[in-house]
Image (cartoon, rainbow, N blue to C red; front, side, top):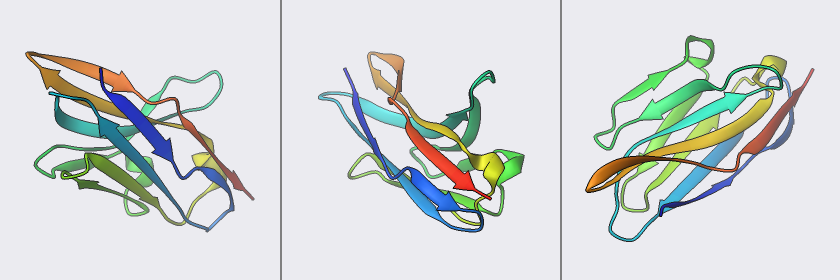
Amino acid sequence: QVQLVESGGGLVQAGGSLRLSCSASGSGYSINAMAWYRQTPGKQRELVARITSGGSTNYADSVKGRFTISRDNAQNTIYLQMNSLKPEDTAAYYCNVRASKSWEYVYWGRGTQVTVSS
C-alpha cells in the first residue's frame, strides 16, 4: 500500500500564490508518474499537471504559464506551485500516484481545498 500526504491548500485572493505538496511512501514500491487533479462539485475530476519519474511534465491548458509541477525523487514528493491564481482555480486538489510492485497501481490522496476569492 502507498500512503499519500497532501498539504498546502487554503484561501487566497485572486492573483496570489499557493504551493501544494504531496509525499508518497510505500515499502517496496517504485513511484512512477505523479500528478495533481482537481474537482469542483458536479464536475468531473480533471488533470492539472503531471510529472514522470524522469521529470517530463504536462499541464492542462488552463494552468499553463501559471502553475509549475516539480518533483523530489529522493523524497517521492511533488510540488505544485500555483501563481496568478484565479477564482476558477477554486477546487479540491487531489494527488495521484502510479506505483509499481510487480504490477502498477493507482493511488489517490484525500484532497486539499484551494479557494481563490475575487
